[in-house]
Length: 394
Image (cartoon, rainbow, N blue to C red; front, side, top):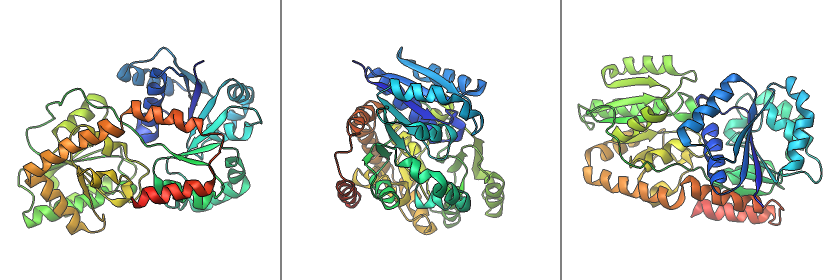
């Protein structure tokens, strides 16, 4: 009998960040393995359009369907019967996010004998995230969220560090690690220009550190360690930083070498990756960066920070991991990748090998099925902590 799975997420619009891509690609991979999979999201013409676009882009398995419920806290109360029916007829309900109405509705409706509930916080319960809008989150947490999360059978974290953070918040939680994945491109494209460039590919938010990259690039330009023909391409939707970043670029005197593209998707995104000399994402906080994986899949070396939470980058020799506040070190790492062609080629090959062995969506989907099999909670929270500590320290 095929496993019946529903992924519940507030939005599958790719403009709102990584979780939408994770959900859609994981769901497709699970369907390709024979599971019957539903995507449950907010009811709107935009979400229907996004689903159709995703399916056009990825190819739709016959056993992957879209289910839409009303959005918003008040309107969502009207889907009580639909929630109960979903929880009773499925094997697994995989919730994505924490503070959203659809996720909350499923948690509050959970009853004994219902489907196993797996919840992926996607970094939303990390100390960094909990400090954002702190007063509001503290109120919701104390009123009902802590109690609602006790109904989760298994938490899905992206890495060992997130597992330790979640255990500190919820000591009795059953926690399993499931990384993000990516698709390996069939062939390398021509890129978008003949001129070399460093690429930043993420939303323009302080969490992602585009200001750090601009400062490091300017430092390399000033010192002469970066070639004169080298540019910087900053691609991603504006989450409140664009005006500040444009002013920063102008003040540092590098406006003629920096291009802001806005959000990019599909073929345009692939072309940006294919033409990049290196990708730099000096994040201040990260759950598990899809962008880093996509870059490695395209053979692009990466320069990032420990907060990216992707330790295999160093072990596999496919990039540099440096302190994002050390602008000199960040600039020096960029210079090494750009100038040393032999190093760049070695890292390029190593990145593709790393992704093909461990991070394709097919492999991640297989790991997800194993995670679902652990929903009985037979492992203790102490076992989880020991495993996460060992994984984080290598």
